[in-house]
Each structure stands twice: as structure tokens, then as C-alpha cells.
Length: 244
Image 1 (cartoon, one colour):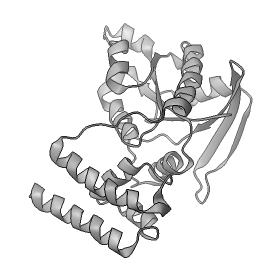
Image 2 (cartoon, rainbow, N blue to C red):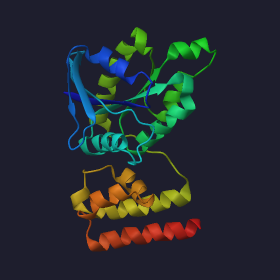
Image 3 (cartoon, rainbow, N blue to C red):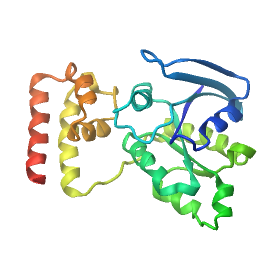
Image 4 (cartoon, rainbow, N blue to C red):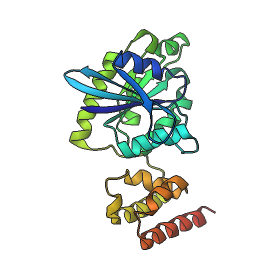
């Protein structure tokens, strides 16, 4: 079974797409440990069963709010086969911020470029093929309220899930030589920690540590040895000193 999750900014048509994809095959509960609603459903496409989870609408994944924590923890801990990022095509620049965060997490992405009708109505031009090349993932124009593009979206979910099993995750964003050196150093220490192997995306973990993400530090502190933790803290301090 393919495990997929929908994510996107609030009010981009995510719930409409979820409802159209899953129909009546839905159940509602709460994510573990919180009162945030969890909607899940199933569909079958090209003989493949797909379990779809509707993650809370969010602008960011910085873990400053409960919705952000729920969405981020689901992606990094549950590691679904595919993340479908619902993007408002009429407000592309703002929406792509979340996309960049998902790429940092090595998420196996499919972009649903929603409100394609509004893009056309406003005379906007988006080169879908070029956007797909730049992001390194399929980009599918959709109109959620009319159900347009959803068959193509399902095709992409099945195709990308198969690519993940065969090829592994894509390369991540490059932040420039200085920052990349710091990321590589922290990632090298993380690789030494067998307890963290396969638990989180290593590069994403290194980036979050360099950012001083308190939740990530709390979640990994018990797995890191004291010497490994000291090494990471020294790299972070050296990086901060270099920036200053």
C-alpha cells in the first residue's frame, strides 16, 4: 500500500482535493497526543491501494504551533511514501516557502498546482515543466472545485512512490559553501550515532540543529552520546562565531 499525505497552506483547496480523492472512504480521529483532527481515507488507482492522510494546513514547519508540530512529526517520523503539496498557483511565491521546507526534509514530493483556472483568469503564466525541473518533482495543474487534474495527480502519486522505492530520495537544496560545510560536519556526527540511523532524515536533522531547533534537540538528546552532543554544539558555536 502507498502511504501518502496532503499538506499545504490554509485555504488552498487541500480539503476539497482530499474529499474528491477519497470520496466516502474516510475516517476521522485525532493525531496521537493532541486534539488536532486527523482525517484519513483510501483510494485505489491503477491497481494500487493508496492511504491518504490530510495534514493540518500550515504556512511553516518550524514547530512553533501545534499544527506545525503535528505535520512535521508525521513527515519525519512516519515517513510516508509521498507528500502531496497543495500550492495555490495564483499565489505561487508565498506558497513555495512551504515547498522549500519540504525539500529540506527529503520529502518525496508531488506538487498539485491548484487554482489553475484563476491563474488563467488573471493572465498569469507559469511554466509548469520548468517549475518541475527546478523543484525536482512532478507539478500537476489542478482545479479542486471542478475535479480537474485529479486523475493526473493520482498518476503522479503512484509513479513517485515507485521511484522512491527504486531510486531513493532526491538531492536537497544547496545553501552555499560555508553553510554546506557546517551541515556536512553536523551530518557526519549524526552518522556516527547508530540510534539515529533511519530515524530522521540526516540532512534535515543537521539543518534543524544548526538553526537551534529546541524540539529537535530534545528529541535527539537521548540518542546522542555525550561526546557526539559536544561535537555538534561546538560546530554550532563555530558557525555562529563565523557568521558574526
